[in-house]
Image (cartoon, rainbow, N blue to C red):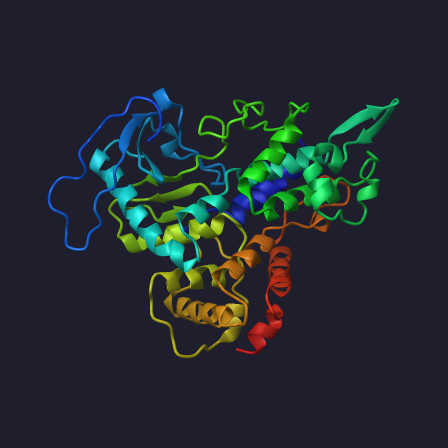
Length: 408
């Protein structure tokens, strides 16, 4: 496998790893259980309906391909709770049935509050929910860029229109694409194009279908999903790379909450505010794992209903706070600045939460020039990512990144 796969995966794992914050019916044999016993606390949501299953009987196992490099104990769980919108696994043997149901209940209540703030409901959320991981998109794009075939004894690289009519027919081909069939040409242009085309597509089912169509005749695709059968016509839980429902890995109280493209990791004992925080990140993660840190955190804390300062001081602190990692702790004083800056952003004419998601989505794109010219790969640097996030802002918003902050 080309080293470029691993260099981009490495960048995704290190720079774009899971968001983390400090604080605080399927098939098979259902094990029925009464909801959490006792009277609800005043104002507490009613326990969600659902059933308990064994993974060994349903073949539903915990998935988190866009997570960090460390093995997750939830992947070893053989028992889960499934409600209308959530599948809850556990990384402990001490979690009770009530604990798993509680996690799903808090998550349901949190999402019911979060989605309207994005201008979404459950139907429109599912319409945008990612079903193929960024990791698999990366692998697919890299493999496509290296495929060759013999034409009259001459080796040629497979072109995009040979892979899928979708690429060749609906998206303008970039400069240099005419040379892609020359095996000696640098494959990075084709690689970046395929990856970006899949990232930018708003219909997750179309992304999945494009990858399935391209799989025909090329058995090296979906190398990380050997059980995935592209000939399966029905798009159901048995064959889709991601579950349609949001996954929860129930953790212990001493673990910080985390979010990814497929779900969240959180303790059943954490307050609903923590669930809102991580699930806000999860919605953003459906379009991008690369976002301006200040915008993501400012939006998230605003969605928690926190107060906003009357004015913004130290504009440069916000402007320059672009790259964040799992362990980034900007401090409460900076969170206040982030919230104010986000409010100023959505106050621009034509800008709302959906427009900000468009910016995040474009920020997830990659550039061929980020990789070494000899095709051996190269780790994407923070400086390259920061420059592109600022450039993407100007392509989506009514003013440039610099102009926005100069006007604050």
